[in-house]
Length: 292
Image (tube, rainbow, N blue to C red; front, side, top):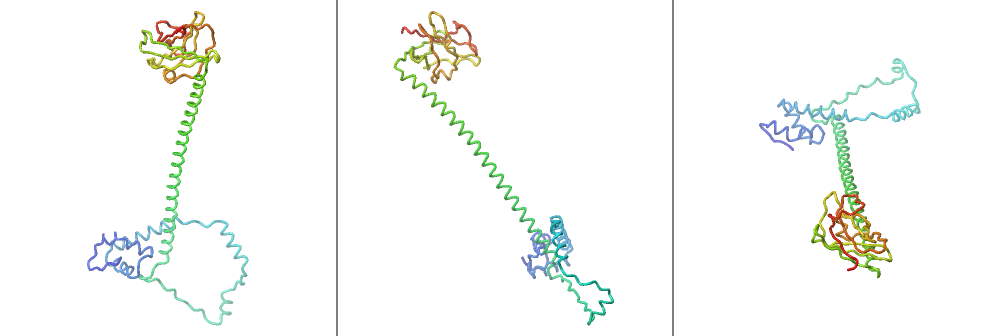
């Protein structure tokens, strides 16, 4: 950017970024002459230019990497392998010189010529910015991959849970199917009592396999601290056939043992969790006779 100016807006000029371009060596010769001229006219521009140079030099020094001990050893070894001329005294050196030594005046950089130190600063700064950008990109990519792995792991766990549930349901249906196709299967309908008048449960069992299943058309969900307990009345005495939750009864139970003779009836009572040794008659929910 080249300003053609008679009166310069100093703040706008500083904010344009031309000073940074000059310090980094990216500016054209015309821009460098312009900044040099204006820095003599406007103290604010001169102060900002000095501040930018100091800041970049500080970043280069702080980001400098000290050479390793291995590099120092290599340099010393190379020096030792190089043939060295014998040392001479000043007088011997003068005698051996056919012509007087010429003094060569090193040119001083003008205000218009770029400062080599600034190029070193610019190169160091670009290197630091490049490494920093790569680090940020790598870090962000690593975080993205970590999040994707976590999502995939979570999805895998969900899929495994779904698969396990499906396998359990398949096993359950297979067991129920094997009971239903048994030709020796007998069926009893357990009807509701005054405790639960609308309740209705279908009970099926086989004397050949000594297994039974049941499923409810309707039955009241028990309190959280209670369960259903199934009873068989065999030889006039109640025998517990197990404890069941509401969901089990509503969705067809897994096959359970019914290993007894002379069963005259089946019944379900509502009992505290864990069950009881004898049925609570006032909590009888359904009952059905095997006599039909």
